[in-house]
Amino acid sequence: RGASSAFITRRRASAVHGVMTRLSRLRASVALVVVLLLAACAPARGARRSSFSVGLDERASTSPLASRRLMTRHERDFDAFVLEHGKTYASDAKEYAKRLEIFAENMARAKEMSARDGAEYGATPFADLTEDEFASSLLMREPIDAARVERLKRHESSRVLPHLPTENIPLNFDWRALGAVTPVKNQGQCGSCWAFSTVGAVEGVVAVKTGDLISLSEQELVSCAKIGGNNGCKGGLMDNGFEWIVENRGVDDEEDWGYLAKDRRCNWFKKRRAKAASIDGFKDVPRNDEDALKKAVSQQPVAVAIEADHREFQLYSGGVFDGECGTNLDHGVLVVGYGYDGESAGHKHYWTVKNSWGAKWGEEGYIRIARGGMGPAGQCGVAMQASYPTKSSSAPLEDGDEPTVLDAALGAVEDVAAWGQERASTVFL
Image 1 (cartoon, rainbow, N blue to C red):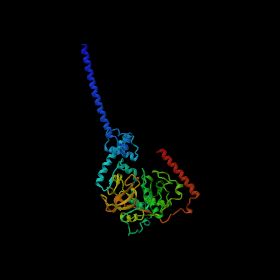
Image 2 (tube, rainbow, N blue to C red):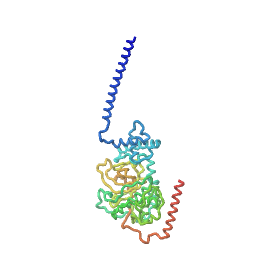
Image 3 (cartoon, helix red, strand yellow):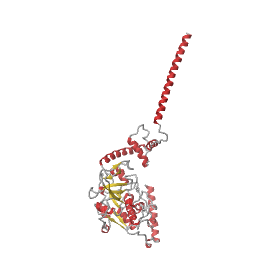
């Protein structure tokens, strides 16, 4: 029995040793495979991860949806969009999901529109907004009604477009190349497009007449130019803006009176100081006449009104825009040139239009709108309400125009009263 027990013990030990040997070999094989996989997947020495991969890693810590094992294409694109445009709802899962759904729908529509039109559409800064949200936050509350415009106009006969040259009109023209256009600005969540269109035209004529390109103050018009029904962030008309600048004997520069994207009280003392630029008057381009508009643009940048409340404008990212839009004017912009694009997939003649939605929209803040062949009103009504300021001198303040002591006292009272109203509205809103 003792010999038998010893034999059994030796057999068991031998079996255990065999199992351990096989396990050791298996571990070695697994380790070798792991090493080979790591070597194959590791980046080359000195190689850098792509910015897209880095972006995904960074988003994993902030995106409520990044914890999913597999992100959809729209989710990845949306997270990249959130980072690029500094959106702040990434920590709110409900709002994030809502905006993701809107973004996905807009991207699907952008793909359809790009295939249909000659222009290109994509993830602009407004790609997370519905069409209604986009229109209500950026466009004028009340569209420009032609009859209302006619009623508001004063001294119509003195503002008709003068004779412009009909010869030597260039085929292509761009005031940006001649230094008469300031960098693209951003109106923010304020319906102040009319002020940007007005100021852009004044900046242009001042540059053409004096050689000095000065960035002027839109906020002064938003706060002070209440003439003719203009209403700050709720909308206004470019002609009324020109008329106010004439009556005010000029407008301040942006450095001194910066833009706030809000309705704020009019600073009486600042308004009465010597101005950075002035104009003598303004003229209207004949209605529904793109040839007349072309002649005017060849002389200086021109303020125009268009309809921009369609998804095509919201998602426009490049090309000659010949997509869907109407003539229910609700947005003020600036025509700074015109040209011909022989490589355009759609319409080839275009207007170069400066917008006020920042440089990340469109073609670095600009849109090329189809020119000619789109009916008398032009594409999006571009030829319906065009006007430009006139300037023949610097028109400085004269000595007799300096405010008297009484004027200054009354102005101080106005400032205090306006400040009190602003404080009250801030407290009770």
